[in-house]
Amino acid sequence: MFKEYYNVIGVMSGTSLDGVDLACIKFNISERWTFEICQTETISYPDNWQDKLNNAIHFTTDELNELNLEYTRYLASIISEFIIKHELSEIDAICSHGHTILHQPQNGFTLQIGNLPLLGELLNYKIVCDFRVQDVQLGGQGAPLVPIGDKILFSEYDYCLNLGGFSNVSFKEKNKRLAFDISPVNTVLNHYANELGFPYDDAGNLAKSGSIDLDLLKQLNEIDYYKAAYPKSLGMEFVNQTIFPLLHSFSIDNNDKMRTFVEHIAIQIAAVCIKPNAKLFVTGGGVYNRFLMERLQLHLSTIDVVIPDDKTIQFKEALIFALLGVLKLRDEVNVLSSVTGAKVNHSSGTIYNELL
Image 1 (cartoon, one colour):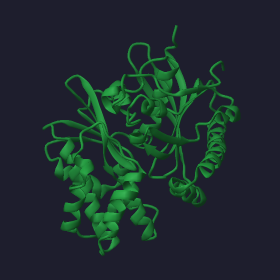
Image 2 (tube, helix red, strand yellow; image 1 turned 90 degrees about the vertical axis):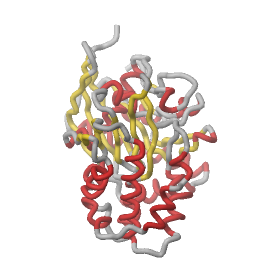
Image 3 (tube, rainbow, N blue to C red; image 1 turned 120 degrees about the vertical axis):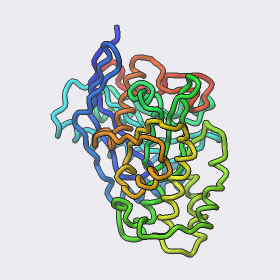
Image 4 (cartoon, one colour; image 1 turned 30 degrees about the horizontal axis):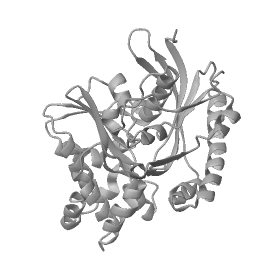
């Protein structure tokens, strides 16, 4: 018999390099899936780790292997301190995404570091991790993985949108859950905020002070990815190879680049969320970019934009990876082929210390 109650820790590190999100989640599956987000924390990356993770896309295989070991140890220490600090006990599993360094599903490859067996050895808890690799092996994009959570936990909304390093959306169409990455968000905005001496664009004020370059906006909106059929997903490779070269080719102020890119983000999201009078559920750090949200609301004038409580905004992805881990423990589907393009729905992830 499966358990009806699970007490797990969800761990997520996103491409925007904000830090490691940790959330203790209690699931109740007695009648339907319900959850409570309990203790939460975001551990910001120090400068040396930001530099390593930012530059790792250019590392050699040996350098990546060493980074993987180092990051696994670092992640284990963060999780251990979280457990001790919040006096957590009776933990059924730690469900960890790791940190994406390389994502090349077209080449049958994706790499999330921090998912080595060493994580289980150091923590001595049941670990569920490495959720993307199997999907890529089955011909999928390995992303996005959050839609199973939208289906199970947030089904009352027409669209579930996350604004993080990238924007991604999930929705139901003809009894199928569909989802894909829409565009870069904080991977680009944070880069230019950093160049201006800020860790991020607080409330979107830097972008708001700039002006739209109509030629740049037109060229951004004409990028081939936006015309491609889904399933599709984005990684830093797309930002480095397509977005940054285009933005760098324009000799305009960073504030103008950010202002133009905010408009681009809003336009691309509005091109996807087209059902009139729909309910749009928005989470992720981008929600706190007030200027971006204003532009988004303007382009989605007929849609009800719903913003949840702070814990859900900030820790939804940690919540969902906690859910993916529980589904894996129950040997239930946690990745949808309609979303990733894999051959079949499947239960993805690796379990360490299964007998604990």
